[in-house]
Length: 351
Image (cartoon, rainbow, N blue to C red; front, top):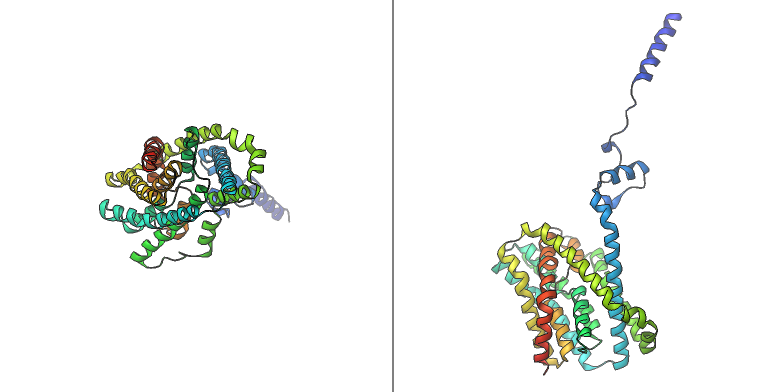
């Protein structure tokens, strides 16, 4: 009995002296994606420990950019709605919205031809990039309206509705182009994809503020003037500086995916879109300010709504190509060269 007790004591002693083995990170049921962190406390700690430090640091930057974007879109949408309430619905409004829809649906076919046969880009990526250049950039729209306000050049308030109408037709044109080459992609017109388009934040903010402006009219504008009008130039300056930093990072990270011909497309396509928009504006008889806005919308490229939709509809496309072109090359081109050129051309066309 004493021998048995001694053996058992030695077993327990050796077991107590062995270090406890903790489960490795692979044994913890945790997703590797930082955006899908489990509620398990051990998983959260390991995920945040393995996440890059830059991701945590950029979160406040993203919140700042989102706040500035929402403020500018709401300000412009509300002012446009109040202006429509003052002027009423006209034939020019219907014709301009129709012209915007035709531009948004037609420009992707021109962009695809240039990219596919001129720059040699593959079919799927050419279709995805073409969708970006048929849609519009809400930030560029904000910039041109701010420039027109500073120049005291009036424009029609219903151009807000035109901008919102030009967001989505280009997406369906891009999908039509992609399907024509490789057949219908899986999940192309799924419920998630349609919901992503209809509930896109920029569209909801623009149309929601536009509707509120139409309902409240001049009385609502007078109440919100200190917030939506007086503070607008300062917020616009901060936002453009922030977008400049983002554009610089995109150009630094994505330039390796581009050839010289594809990069040149980012500066040629805005001029083509602006030329078609100028022709429509001349036929409708828009004012100089509204002509400049329509030209800017035709020249701009989306980097918010369309990339989100393309991720769902065309997952095989490389998003770095489209974002580098639209955000890193076309966006600065429109701000520095394009908008002054479009305003000067619009004043000549509208005479």
